[in-house]
Image (cartoon, rainbow, N blue to C red; front, top):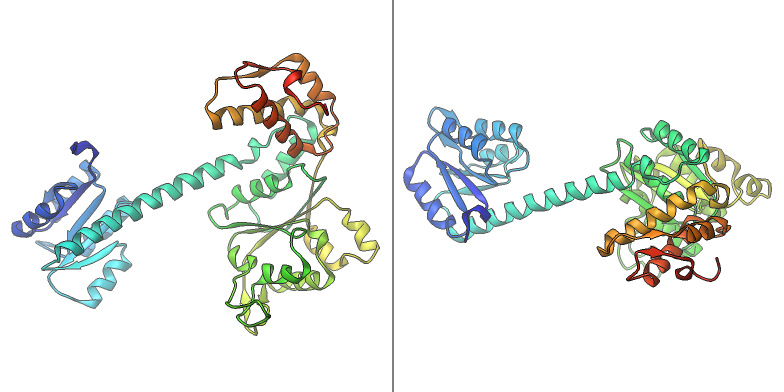
Length: 392
């Protein structure tokens, strides 16, 4: 195997015999570099940037745990596995507390060593992938990536920027398909909670018999089908953001329980007796007129004022015609990238047709129509009216 493709493991141990044993076990799979003391080990760590370190607890002139703390301070990603000749529980606990990935006693078992090294490297790779995915999500939902140059959308961008990094409850209004969940995600991923959970729940999609269990969870045996404890959305969203879409569809009973959570920041699972504390930011959305529902007695007034601290309204697409060409190009570019197709553009007639259409389904409908045009125009460098659905 090409050594440039192998993971690099740094061995820091003052016993040449131990280093030779470690090298013999690891070398067929990994590239190894060796150091006989702490100073040499730190120099190699900084110079060679190993993927993993095997570090002896007892080193001449220093303490392995001190070296561990230095390694962790300089690089928090490379796992460090501690080696020791004594089975001390305190040493093991201290090593884990200071950031060791694992702990191995001498004389070590060959198979156990291989398993521990492999597991630590896999965990490191998983953490790296998660970090990259989080960065991609943050970029995707950055408020400036919301598409639109119209004054109404510019106003939305400004408000997102102003309120994102707070725990203030936000109510997003607008017709179906205007992008309310995208705004909710922009609020979350531009806040200090960006690395915590974002949980979305469509309140209109669940029957009344399930919505309370979905929100708050339930205990085993609390109703006929409750064969095990279930964790609800509030618990899953703890320290993060809970997006309640179509909040106007909640029943009066569920509204009352939601109000209590917002006031007390605690709740009880269905069938439970223990109160559970949560730190959750609520972002709600609706395509209904909540003020009208309040007047009709269909939505609690106290809950309305509790969720309507900051109000954002997403205008329908027919009211921001200048954004239509931008959105069309955005959705086309997205599909071209996903399918790795050659560049395409819209003809002037196609743009005119898109701009004249009233878009009753708003942005969601546009994405669907551009998807269709993308499919029917395969092999062409220009999307023309003939590639667009006849409803236009």
